[in-house]
Image 1 (cartoon, one colour):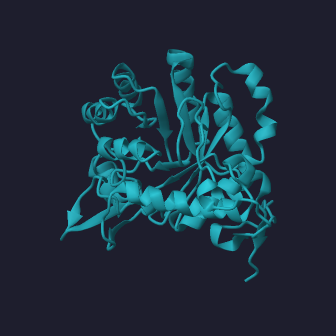
Image 2: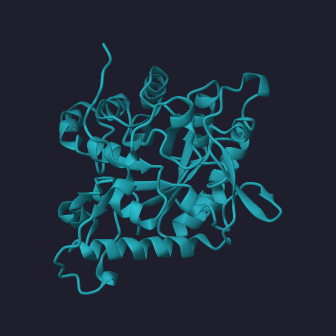
Length: 342
């Protein structure tokens, strides 16, 4: 029998935030700060994506200085991954480092931990899988509460529940929403991102029994990260209002001067991590799976990431003021969504 979920599924473009009576007299009074990761206080709940044309050590450090956080990609050698992390650590900046689930994942984790890294991302396209379960189990057995783990990606409540129960502190939400991700085209598998965020984040209360069973759930428990599909600043506001604690993005940060990656005729290349070009950086061409990402050229002028984060913060502050919210938590409580009928 064919299974069909007949609930309406919505993307960012399908919803809008209602304006409400507000006592926030100036958007500048809206505080976008958060300590969602338990140990890291951020001025804005934004993380640069762990993509090879978005975040290396230089970019992660710039994100830290701008009041956000970066996630260093894993599409490089273990030795170079350690070097990139040390760029951030040299100025006492915190960042995430990425590992996978394949042959070198344990060696990469050990090397990064020995270098001082404590915030890890276990990064695979389909996070709700045995490979993820095994990797999280190994990391918890070896390092216990000494590390903080973000894991993903998932797009369902059950996926998030399992990742938290297997060892995650934070879970990335998003299967196929990114502009350079072709998973939805190649496989037919996806879920509209706004509905995925809202549905998964609403399961927060269902997760509470895990607190008594797992001692790694410290600080702010059950952090939800909206990953992908951000095309404009308003989408960040919609993701946060729908329940996300942190928003991870690539395209919006791709024009930052600090981003790594090749340039062609002075123009930046931006590519999905399942694109052929990215996979060739860590795989032999004879072992490549069918690509689920593309490469594209960024035409916009590059600028310091500090300026991009400043605009994001201003837009989020404005959105909060329209919802009579002076803090992120108030924003989540007060926000009211409408659906665009097409």
